[in-house]
Image (cartoon, rainbow over all chains, first blue to last red; front, top):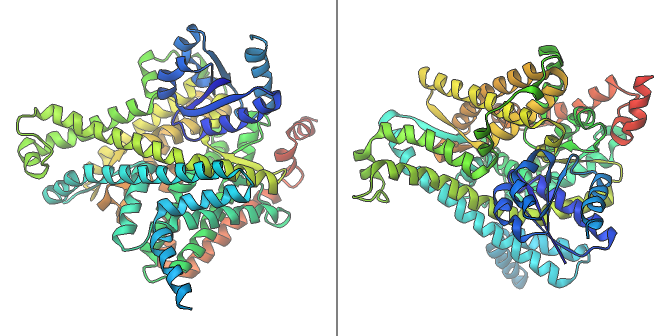
Amino acid sequence: MLKVIAACGSGMGSSQIIKMKIEKIFKKLGISVQIHHSSVSEAKNLASNYDVVFCSEALKGNFANAAANGTIVIGLKNLLSEQEIEQKIIENVVNKK
Amino acid sequence: MNIIMTIWGFFQNNILTKPAFFVGFIVLIGYLLLKRPFYEALAGFIKATVGYLILNVAAGGLVNNFRPILAVLKDRFNLTAAVIDPYFGQAAAQAAVEKAGKSFSMMMVVLLIAFIFNIVLVLLRKWTKVRTVFITGHIMVQQSSTALWMVFFCFPQLSNAGVVTMLGLLLGTYWAVASNLTVEACQELTEGGGFAVGHQQMFGIWLTDKIAGKIGKKGKKLEDLELPGFLSIFNENVVATGILMLVFFGIIMTILGPELLHKIDNTFGKTQNFYFYIIEKSFNFAVYLSILQLGVRMFVSELTESFQGISNRLLPGSIPAVDCAATYGFGHPNAITIGFLFGALGQFLMIIGLIVFKSPVLIITGFVPVFFDNATFAVFANKKGGLKAAAIIPFISGILQVLGGAFAAYFFELAKFGGWHGNFDWDTVWPIIGVIMKYGKYAGVAVVILLLLSIPQFQYRKNKDHYFTIAEDYESYASSISK
């Protein structure tokens, strides 16, 4: 089971959107996941407990430490684009396994 | 007959007038209708109810933490004060509604009616020209709360059923029409990203998109700016709120002085240092805000998910209107910081202005409007007008946020409870709607709804050929205008 966290500024709006979208794509790709969503500050502290972090491209810099420790950090340009999400999951998660 | 009345009485006393259980049961029934397994529905019920109870704790804490300071300001300087922030606004509205002896559960009923009406307007899009469904759950909760108080304030005699029906239609119209206004701006910014903004500054986004190109040119690049690194700490909500509250309440409490504060606030220990007391008191606002957001997140995530499901099932081809932060990926990070900084500058200058001109309401900057509204404006402004527009528009917005917020907090008497909604549309469009409601009564509400509904008609007239293609098929739109 892949552990995933979606993050945004307040932990309410866009992280929820990301969560709903990636849930759908992971299901489509047949990868079993557990997804949480939270604010960036929370996610920053928790990132090492997760396999993958999703956030807006603009906030990716916050997770430099987690990325250095081996957590996969995926920045999204269009949070609602299933095409972008699918491509980035295949690129960063599926092909790295 | 008696049994029915007893059951109804039980239902009314224990569920209908208790927002926590009311929200819980809505989620429970919603999940069962969506044919989810029972254990998932039960989990949803618990999360929604607990989330709401958490929110109650926090809203109470927020108002109580503020109360002694408000009392002294009133006593000493004949001043009231309001933090312009949707969470403070929501807590203040809840306190005001409950003080008027009404049940806050009606907020949820309003929200549901408004959501359904938004869907109806989209279903009838052939005539209404509405293309968007507003699905940003936490915003819908905040706006329903503030608007519910506004209606109680303007129509104290109206029956509960009348209040929720009237406000449901009004708010649903606003959600549909205002988010629909952002379609063109969003589609151009995101090059066919397929979403609109459903947040708190939709009229502002539309205005920004219209005027940015006139203020500046794309010449001077915001992307080349080198901004100091310490500004990144404002990315974190808790840190930003802590700093803002410390600055504002630090100044206020220093002016009030330790003796007075000892007298009115028994949480100020006899041996405690004055400045550490100020820090603790200011940080408490960040504490309650964090708890409030935790609660909102718990019950709203259940709501947003089902809204998304409903709108996908019922309305293929419609555009979801989502959180304004979804646009940030399409702007340079500098745009977000510039918007926040110039918005804050506008707000601070205007607050000084309020003090100089002896306004009866003191405004305190809240994090959400100054950051999220102005960052969003800067992203849109930069696209069409470059750095100059990305600085000037948030600056003006900051001024309007304080001015409109002060007027609204005073006029709708929420300054007594220390908060006003404070986001751009709620400092401009909504105070106007409120004043029309107050003096125009039912006719006023009808006029507002009709005026709002006429907006998409004008948009459609101006752009008949592309009105629906820009939303449904951006690529064919883009190729047809480049010909």
